[in-house]
Length: 270
Ligand SMILES: NC(=O)c1ccc[n+]([C@@H]2O[C@H](COP(=O)([O-])OP(=O)(O)OC[C@H]3O[C@@H](n4cnc5c(N)ncnc54)[C@H](O)[C@@H]3O)[C@@H](O)[C@H]2O)c1
Image 1: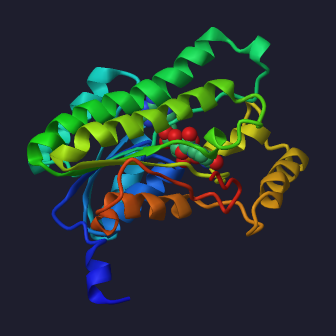
Image 2 (image 1 turned 90 degrees about the horizontal axis):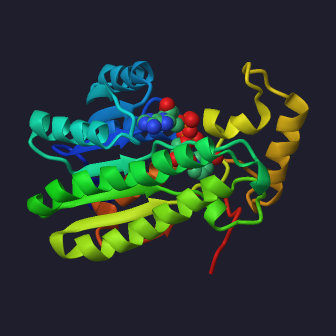
């Protein structure tokens, strides 16, 4: 790789806020952005996990700190973004990674409490983060927002994830609308739509309430996703983190309003 290509991924002097940074894709993203030189605020509803991520970044020589934030509570995510700006004077990157999903549930059995929580975290939480960051980024004249959708928006034939799918389809539309609105202010907005990535979130499909894994169900479940990938693989959190890094860096200078699909070819929409 030539030096200019590497320079496009250099995030030195930039501030990143990563939600859901305590686990899975969010943790991998925070660590990767930190390794590229960004100062990273690791935000998660689980403040202890977020602290483990920020401590890891610091132990590798990076700059990071953490905060407990429920993204579904507008004042909490706004407060986190304000804190990042107060501390570093700017916000260059917002990665809206925090997300939840229901257990696979037939429509007739969907509980209103679950419906409201999934929409509140995945859709409204992403909206609140975008709105708070966009105001500051527009004034700066530069900034990057990366939202996390899901390949479920490409594969609605997956039954039982109606609330999750609705929320993630909304995230895609939010991304496109904001890309239009914010582009003239120098702010890019993109999304990733990951395929199956093995994390605590995706393991819920074969884990019971006591945390016990049904191994037979797991093996069948994972095989199903491997079988629909031309690569014959399921993904790792770092596969998504690299896609987010690309969208958050100058390497994607001419990319906005797009959905990048780190999904092993599990879905190939035209
Ligand atoms: N794992 C997959 O197969 C997959 C596929 C497509 C999309 N995604 C999306 O990727 C994102 C990350 O998922 P993951 O697989 O890394 O899950 P994960 O469960 O490993 O991590 C999610 C993190 O978000 C945090 N979180 C949950 N609710 C929150 C809230 N209200 N406020 C702040 N933090 C909150 C959790 O504490 C956790 O640390 C989610 O948006 C998910 O929908 C995951």
